[in-house]
Length: 158
Image 1: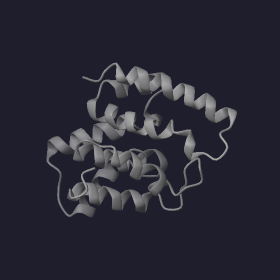
Image 2: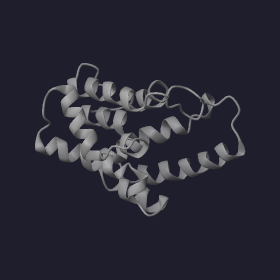
Image 3: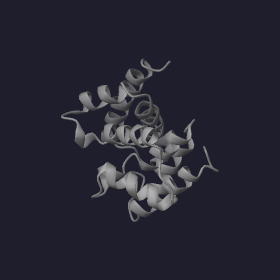
Image 4: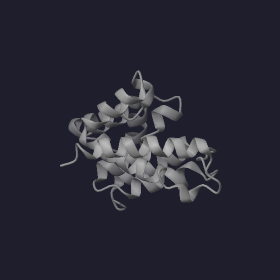
C-alpha cells in the first residue's frame, strides 16, 4: 500500500467516516474488514484511494463528485484534473447502481485499468470464504459468480 501518500491517508480517513457503523458479511467493521484490505492490495496511490472509496457512492448518500470533493477537503489539496477524472471515472464504474445489470457492470469495469485493478482486489477479498464462520449456500453461489467475474477481468490485464 501507499502508506505515506497523503491521498491514501485522506481516503482512509474519509472511508472510515463514511462507512461508520457498517459491517461486512462476516459482521466485521466494514472499514477494517473490507476497505482496508482492498486498499492494501493496491499497487498505485490511485488504486489505494479508489480501494478505500470504491463503495462510498454506492453505500452512502454521496455522489462520486461529492466523495471526491470531500476527499480533497480532507487532504487539504486539489487533485490534478487528470487524477480527479481518473479516480472519479473508476469510482463511477465501480458503483453497480450505474449499470443496468451485473454483466454490463463487469464489462464496463473491464475497460478501465484503475476500476479493473480495484475490482480484482475487491473480488479477491470477497472470494476469501475463510472470513465467514459458516458460509451459506448463498455465499457459495456468490463465490462462483465472483470466480467467473475475476477470470473475465483477468483477460483484460496486460
